[in-house]
Image 1 (tube, helix red, strand yellow):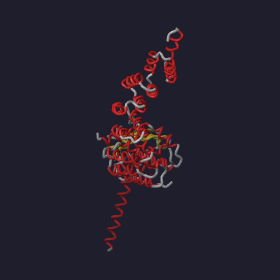
Image 2 (tube, helix red, strand yellow):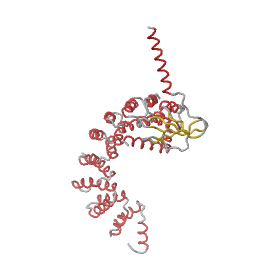
Image 3 (tube, chains in turn green, brown):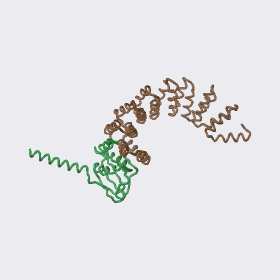
Image 4 (cartoon, chains in turn green, blue):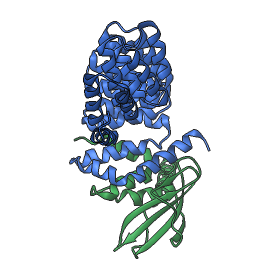
Amino acid sequence: MKTTLRLMLILLFVAAVITSESHGANFSVPQEDGWYTWQVEAADGSQLQVYALMDAGQPVKFRARGDSICFSGTSVKDAQDLGFVTADQSIIWLQGFIYPVGDLSSEAILLISLHAGELPIDILDRLLSAAF
Amino acid sequence: MTIRSRLIIATIATLAASTSLAQSAVSDVEDPNEILKIAALEALISAPPERALPLVIKVLDANNTDEVKERALFVLSQIDLPEAQARLLELARSSDPELSAEAVRMIGIGGNEEALAGLAELYSTGDQDLREAVLEAYMIAGDVEAVYAIASNAADAEEFEGAVEMLGIMGAIDKLRVLSESSGYTEELIQALGLAGGDDVNATLMDIYRSAETDDIREAALEGMLISGYDEGVFELYKESNDINEKRDLLEMLSIMDSDKMMEVIDAALQGGR
């Protein structure tokens, strides 16, 4: 019985670690002014290049390019590359700019929807289920 | 690149290009939840159709604003699944007249053949507003045959006029000519020709005017020229005419058309010509 309980606790711990890593709460774009870019898996399975323009510690513009996706203009040549990031990591960072509702909200939502995985649909579902 | 991929690119490019438009539209909406719902609906277009469908249906079934439901209907029209098109048709049969008319229009935008075919039954049982929505949907989908079928089976003059006018807007000159074979060029057909416009139509309008046996047909031909902007034709008729009353009517028409030919008429008059 004790062994079973211990095993269950270990499994729960491992699951928590995996969840924490896959959701990647630690990812964030540097606050220094300028363009930053990172790669994620896109909803269609291809690779998506995401761009964010930071100004005074906050993103002011988003862009994205992929095999079948072009969001908000062309790519940026002098962006600092942050490398590959899991889709969930990128989404969680972008999700932080949905509220308060403003100019970036719609861009963040659209950009989130281009990412791979279940999280984009979950977020859209939550937004669409909100009561007036 | 698949059609779906191209659609995603086109959609996102459109959304991105129309950011200012979208923002101005969104700025009209005051409720933050509504703003986010509209953004989420637009984002659903790039989601896998089988995932997007239940979310869109949930929005349509819930107590949402007309604005949100209209966006949801658009997204539904873009989902290429039989269930989505069936649902759209179901909503087109709704007892809510605004929702019904909007669903009909979205069927036109979606262009799904089965859903479009379902509109025929809706047209035959619908009221005037719904019938207009169906004609508009056919126009959006470019379904000339469906509009032609309505025109050729019209039960009354009003129904005939509505369908024929739509054929004119759609530029379906051949269908208008076919309809004229059984009834001759009626006023409705002549004005619809004017809506279609073009060199062939202008020549036909001139023929109709010259051979008209009634004033009504002559006036309809003139109105057709007004609609198609054929002031050269009106001017030609003016020069041909020796009837002072007719010349006055034609001159009045040139004036309504704000035609440069008016100056030629004035010059000729000043020089003592016709």
